[in-house]
Structures are given as C-alpha cells and as structure tokens.
Image (cartoon, rainbow, N blue to C red; front, side, top):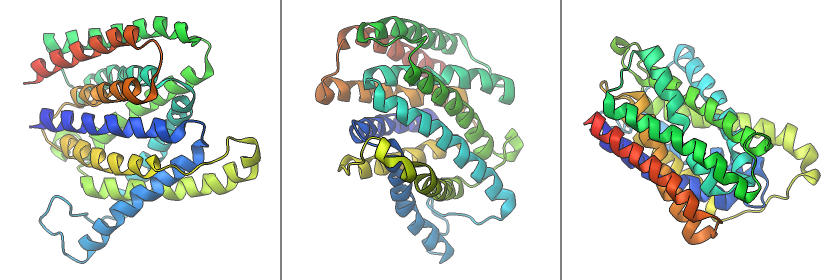
Length: 304
C-alpha cells in the first residue's frame, strides 16, 4: 500500500515542480515563495478550524492538538524545508527544468544512506541496483549540462541546487522521524498536525523575510509578476504532501525507498519541459531520465 501511495505522491510532485518553473521564470523568487506558503496555509486552515469544532473526528483529515512539545518539532521542520526551498527556488529560476529534475532525483541516495544509519533500514539486491542507476544518472547529467554552458563544478546555481538537495534529504529523514510510530523509533506525531502547522509557520517566517530582506532591496531584484501558475504550486504541493505524509505514517514504510520513488516526479517535469518549455538537449537528457526510470523499476520490484 505505501509503495502505491508513494508513486501517487511522486506524480503530483511532478506537476508541483512544473508549475514552480512556470512561476519563477523571470520572476522574483521570494514573493513567489511567500505566496506559495500563504496560499497553502489558506487551503489548510479550514481543516484546523473544522477539527477544533469536532466536525472531522475519526476522519483522515482530523488535525490533532498539541502543545510546545509537539510544535517545537514542527517549527524546526518549517525552518529546514524553507532553507531547502529557498536555495532550490533560486536554482530552478536559473537552470533548465530538465537539469533540475534529474539532479533532485539523486537526493534519495542520501536519504537511503541516512535511513540505513538512523533507522536500521536494509536494502535488498534490487534496491541496490536502483541506487546504482540513480547515481549513474547524476554523473551523466553533469557531463550533459556542459552542452548548455552549465559547469557542475563552478556554476553557483548548481551549488544552490546541490545545497537544496542535501537539506531536502535531511528534511526527508526528519519527516520519517516525526511521523514514524514511537515503537519504530519515531516521534509519532499526527501527520495532519504536522502538515497544517508547518505551512502556517513557514508563512509567518516568509512574511518576515519578505518585509525585512526582500522589500528594502526589491528595486535591485527581478520585478515580481503575478501569474496564474502561482496558486497551482500550492494546490499540488498541499495535495502531494498529504499523500506523502500518509505514506510515511505507515509503520512498515522505508523512508529511503519512499524518497527514491518521490523523486520519480522527474518524469512529469521532464515531459512538461519537453512539451511546454521547449528546453534544449532533451534527447541526451532523456537517456539520463531512462536511467532514473530503470532505477525506479528495480526499487519497485525490491519493495513488493
């Protein structure tokens, strides 16, 4: 069951990545990021209100309560996710989507290693083969990126992209800790509580950043433009996060495998880049994507 919901989350994350790219092209990053958190919070607050009124008791949408002992964990998650998003958004603005997607698809390799070290997860032969193909795709992608003038060793946007991937891997491991049952070594937090409140905290943090960091220097930054794609970021993100957290809350799920499957969202973003953004060198990148897909197949076979 958890493998199927992980693949469903991956598909939705692919649309999320695609609408991010549309929103960020020649646009100011921080206002887009703030609006993402604001709209996401607006979509989720009604569930919090209805839960407090008792209207959602016994449903999968119920938001449990909790004091500072719960919220301190969620606040830390908000900071981690925002750090990954901020660096990732700047990278996405300045790099082709067909480069960003496959690089992000290598993030689960770090999560796999973390899952083994922190949660005692062990991979079988098929899963190790999947990891190998994902790592190989990253190496080939670095070579292919030079055709577009992208030097993976010296391009600062690639550095931002890698930084986002590293922080994102830490975020995935932290998610598993927060949502795993106590008997499995986790914190056992309610997934809807985490989903709702981490978006609210992110919105508050981004508002402060927008007012005190972006606003004073906005004349030197790329002008902000409202686009219809911006609310679509939040819609797909909230939906994907709901399915993703539902998956992580399953007692038998493996965070390393879930993270790898999650990154197969690159299939959707790659097709979007080919059909709508008309990005370059897609034929060579398609081979890198094929390696990612082969890795996904082996991970699926190894997790059945």
